[in-house]
Amino acid sequence: MAEKSESRVLSMAKQFYADFGLPRLIIAAFLLALFVLAVILRMNIGMLVSDSLVRIGMNGILVLSMLFTLACGVGLNFGLAVGVIAGLIGAVTSMNMDIPGFGGFLTALAIAVPIAVVFGWLYAELLERVRGQEMMVGTYVGYSIVAGMCMFWVLAPYRNPAMIFPLGGMGLRNTITLDRTFAHVLNDFLAFKIGDLAVPTGLLLFFALFCVGAWLFFRSRAGHAMRTVGANPAFAESSGVNVKATRRLGVIISTVLGAIGIVVYAQSYGFIQLYTAPLNVAFPAVASILIGGASLQKASVGNVVLGAVLFHTLLTIALPVTQTALQGADISEIARMIMSNGMILYALTRVERR
Image 1 (cartoon, rainbow, N blue to C red):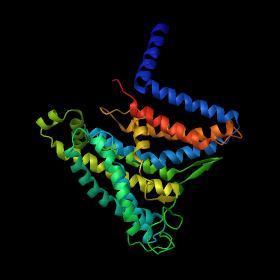
Image 2 (image 1 turned 90 degrees about the vertical axis):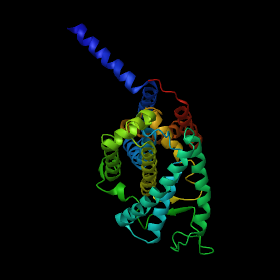
Image 3 (image 1 turned 90 degrees about the horizontal axis):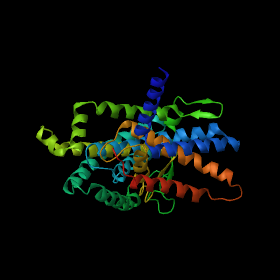
Image 4 (image 1 turned 135 degrees about the horizontal axis):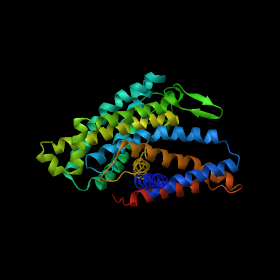
């Protein structure tokens, strides 16, 4: 009996190792080591965890947007900036109306989502014409729309004094504060504290709501059709599935989630950043979902959650711990660049064997 029990435990451990994967075990172990070092250095663990929860919630929907393009066979959405631009248009338009609180937040989403649907449809049509090269073309599309929108931000007819340059009376500022409108509306909703640990309940619930929605979608008929198209387009077409329409749906949903995600990010950050700020917005989201265990062949909501937790907690914890450990040497920005870009490089070059 003892040998059978031991064999069962060993089998479960092997299965966990196979499912979780060595790279994620290494990252999790490194993350645990950072927490141990933080305790040794007598840092405020509650504050570190609070910052990590905020970062996970504010980036989670952007990571989730990658799931739908992976599922429909388009690959990683390097053109996430298309959706982000739609979200920024909604946010600045809501701010121009000077609507405070949840009203301003919901107005931003109500404006952003229809724009994102139109942008997503056009983006999907373009990707359909370059099938097989979607990720490369998506990168150029993302860079192009960010550059092109720089002219829009200068010429847009917004007149709110808190948003425009004081000299000349036109053109949006590079960074606009959300203090007068919808800053932290989700973070503060149902928030509570346990000692030094502050939990942004509303922000995490909003992310969880979209994760549950995605989980339910992939159990619907449309979700199964999307996964079939991503796995085997020829088989899907022979089964009566409209491959083009399904791929278009995946791209549109991803673009809409990008628009919603940037509005959530902005309200949590407290500022909106325009012009070239969204240029590389796709790369952390790409790295997160890949670190979470997704591949070009298979991805799930679990990969989204795990990747968001590992990637953004590590970035949040590593910087203050490094700064405290190396007192007198201000290398926080250098450490941030090494760790964030190092993880992105790992994620983009990783080959998953299944």
